[in-house]
Amino acid sequence: MITLIVPTRNRAHTLRRVASSYFAQDDVDELIFVSDAGDDDTPAVLTEIGRRFPQKTLRILRNETRLGASQSRNVGVAASTNDFILFCDDDEYLEAGYARILLEKLQAPNVGAVSGRRIYLLSGETGSQALRRFGTGLRDSKPFSALICEYVNGARFPGDLTIPITNAIILTRRSLLLEFPFDDHYARGNGYREETDYQMNLFVNGFDIRVTNDCHSLHLPLSEVRTGGQRTSRLKRLFWSIYYTRYFFGKYYERYAQRLGLRWPRWFAVVAFAIFAAYRETLRPLLHAAWMAGLARRARLANISPQTDARPESSGAPGNVLTFVIPLRHPQNSPDWAALKRRLADTMRSIAGQDDGRWRAIIVANKGSDLPPLPSKFELKQVDFPPNPMFEQGDNDRAAFLDSCRLDKGRRVLTGILEADRTGYVMVVDDDDFVSSRLTSFVAGHLGENGWYVRDGYIWGDGGKLVYEYADFSKFCGTSHVIRTSLYELPARIAATDPDYIRKIFGSHVFIREYLEERGEPLKPLPFVGAVYRVGHAGAHSKSAGLIRQVFFRRELLRNPLKVAGRFARLRLLDASLRRQFWGCPVNGESP
Image (cartoon, rainbow, N blue to C red; front, side):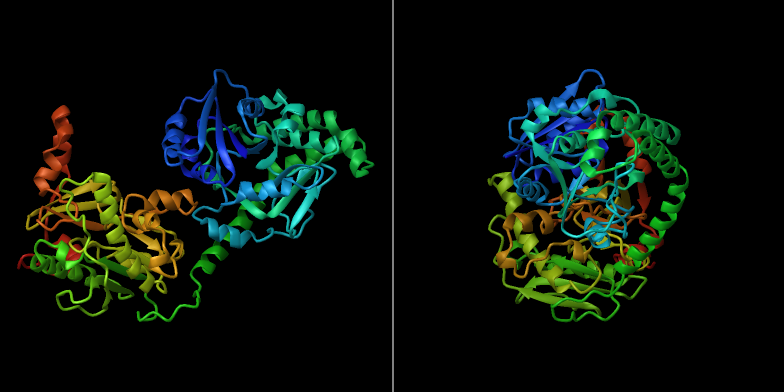
């Protein structure tokens, strides 16, 4: 088995996004994070993620004083219990199967370390988009520059390659790490060459280093990782890269040059590197920015190109960009079906009020359900799922009750999404809620994005005259996500789908945002109030109280009465403007 080691310092914000991909690796049963005298909430973040992987051993170590990344790696190695060690940085995802694939590659004769390809994500780019963009490389160039001893990350080459050094995300043997430990001389500045020092030590001692196109690590966009770690200014980077390369060549250059058959003297290689480093820190960033802007534009254009698949054509009109899916419970699970019909009619009017016609709506209901007349652009998908046997919690265990409700709802939602897979985006809408009329036009203007979560929404007590603006709405209400359909891992048949996957991804709104973020496909906050959560009626899915009780009769307000004033400030009169935006027509017989 494999131990995964991550040196880190004050990177809780990046680990929260990427660490789940480490725990999910096959053949990794021990994970060691070494905090280099950090003082943020990294331990809490890792502990929370680790709870979701109880079969994995998590160890969080902390250096009392800063030792640098190299010595932190040695600390992790000393604490490890497996024969194989996978090193990872704290700001990149690992593709599924990364560790397992490298373990197979490491079994080849004389291989001392092996890595996958490293891809730098563009801002807003998903993992799948990055993999398509990168392919087997970004440009036709040599993958290794021997004179200056630099691995060219974006070089295009197929298959596997034997090379003196590769990127930092390597799998190696613990026995080799004990024989050739990381050099702690690289503790200051930006630590340039700290990872390649170990690889070069293996290389000059006769071992091969390999890199494969069969797996990938995905580095967070550089604009998102400018805090924590070992970040320095451009001039300091230039100084330390030359300083450490001079030290690095002093240790290895003669043996390195002999193995490769190089004829240049060491001083010439140091001067050549210094010239290259000066170019890299001055002129190249300008050229790179222009090049990346072109890539981003091409990626965006590619994302909005028509997609084809083997499924039958959707019955939706050509050009639809958003599909609303409304799952209905089994009639036997409704205490008042006539009231449900009235609330559903309100929800349908709200959806029909979109200010852009490129949408459709799918209602998923049991065969024989008595429904109100369906407006134009609404379709009915009939199912024969049985009633939920645990629709009311009663004396049932809460966890079992939630699992039962999420499975029942998830199957209905998944059925609707399978019908909507030829349109661009999907929004699940509960049968008693309301949505903004701006949603479709907003989606149409931002095609290619992963999707959005409703950060700000309103709570409305059924029949009331006030609404309350609620922050972090997506954790509170199910009508709260607009997601690009292709991000869902849709099965061919519902019956063949893992029930736990149905519960988590389709049956609940509380997991999907974090799930996509862990995959490297984060959602953005919707930049306007996106939905209204109706509360305080007998048929409410969440058994919610009325607006006043929901907002003001809270235990935490007794401990901090000053918060009451803040909550009053968020109340708003349900005026004609809100009715037009969310109700689509007058509410309770009033004129807009």
